[in-house]
Amino acid sequence: MNLLTETRPLDWLTDFPAIPDGWAYLDTAATAQKPKVVIDAIARAYGETYATVHRGVYQRSADMTVAFEASRQRVARFIGAGSADEIVFVRGATEGINLVAQSWGDTHLKAGDRILLSTLEHHSNIVPWQLLRDRIGVEIDVAPLTADGRIDLDAVEAMLTPAHKLVALAHVSNVLGSVLDVRRAADLAHNVGARLLVDGCQAVPRLPVDVAALDCDFYVFSGHKLYGPTGIGVLWARADILDSMPPWHGGGAMIDKVSFARTTYAPPPARFEAGTPHVVGVVGLHAAIDYVDAIGLDAIHAHETALVTAAREALSGINSVRLFGPADSAGIVSFAVEGVHPHDVGTILDEAHVAIRAGHHCAQPLMEHLGVPATARASFGVYNGLADVAALAKGIERVTRIFG
Ligand code: PMP
Image (cartoon, rainbow, N blue to C red; front, side):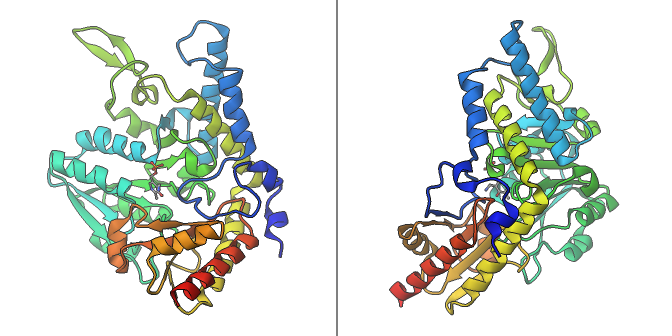
């Protein structure tokens, strides 16, 4: 089977200029490398068409505004949003969740209300809720995982009560790669009158996502994991929910009318986009979405699933390797090598031109659950092939030889 030619319609070596031949980049869950079309779109936006948006009366600014809003339309279409007005540009998933916690949480929740999270959440889907707890006195419950590392939705069902106003879960775990049945999570949340927020950081680059079909209430993701620029991300929420949310950052662009006596605010999404936006980031995100859509999320998912299967097979053949997470994980394989700290695994692999992540992956409660301080993590992207899996396995064999 030749994964590269089967599932990649574009020439990957020229598509990704920052990946030199012979370098196995296996850290896409942290951030994806950028295809040339995205780099070119960014260079063009700064080098040829640059201007601010929404305020200029001159043609260049009007053109940039058209490009900026076209990206919003593109994002909406990409994730199945009902309208581009439901797309709020933020810096990334972290900012999106903090926005919801502060704007929606501060006004819609009160002391004694409950929020349900899970053991595998990224810190960015834990800490904003703890800050909310410190501010207004909500309670946080934590759903357990199944033995193979999925959020246990049977347990979620048993834990949920009418006191729960929000369920906030990762669509795909950034450590285990396990995929949430979002539709079922939404049904469970809605059955008790709670909203569902989905952290889609690891899902959007790996799976087709349709927020209408998933029936969630909030969905957040970061552009840089989707082959786009850093510093740009998306918060989607249904229009009626965004309408019900007060501003969180005050400043230019989010107002209707300002006087010292009284200020009124713009409707969403502008209400949540104070200040000069990341114009070029938004344009780059558009190019990234065009890029992944041209390949197709179904094809990307199939490609990464094949790589995960190959990696799990290769690593499970090495005695001292312990694999974490389910066999059908989406693009991500966490593992430990017995008696070797993951940082040493990462360093030795780096010498063999294999780049993995070693650490707690901003998921310390999950590390505690797994009983390890850290894991080694290989994560795949559209540019990886079986040669990268072979390099990883060869590198791990070298690790086991060195630590003998
Ligand atoms: N959630 C998950 C599941 C993630 O993997 C990440 C990034 N590691 C985040 C949230 C935070 O994303 P960002 O740092 O881009 O805001």
